[in-house]
Image (tube, rainbow, N blue to C red; front, side):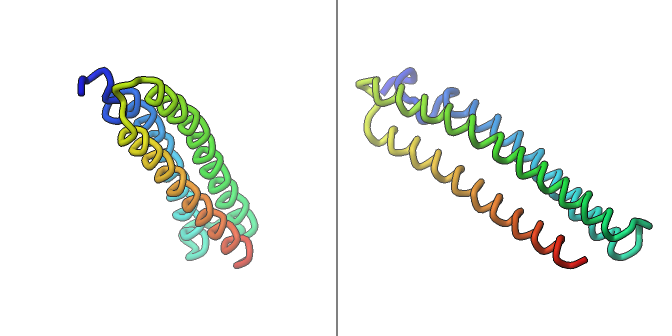
Amino acid sequence: MTTETNVAYSQNVYFPESLLDGWLSVSALLLTTSLLFYHMSRVKSLKVRPYLAKVVAVGLILISTAYMIYALIPYTKRMDFNIAECEKIHDCGDDQTQELKLLKWSYLTLGGFTVLFQSIIVYLVTTTI
């Protein structure tokens, strides 16, 4: 196979992945900041009222979740475009199409589980005070 038809291992796939990775890093940083702030307020390292600590922590987690969803939606659209383009190319075999679909669904599943765990954290934070 030539480089032009090897869509699964080309910049067409690496670019959406790198964009997703950047946004997921922002999401992880916000989640970490939220949990650190909440912990510091609970152990009295910071003098913050419990309700305010809860609001700030939950707010940061919700922003983190929004970034996660904001990253996954364009990623899905970009990967769907790449999959459709791969299906149009005769030299791009079914193995590449399947690889692209597996890659897309693995990232979506990972993102879904992350959103689920962020939701559990929000529930735990809101019910502990």
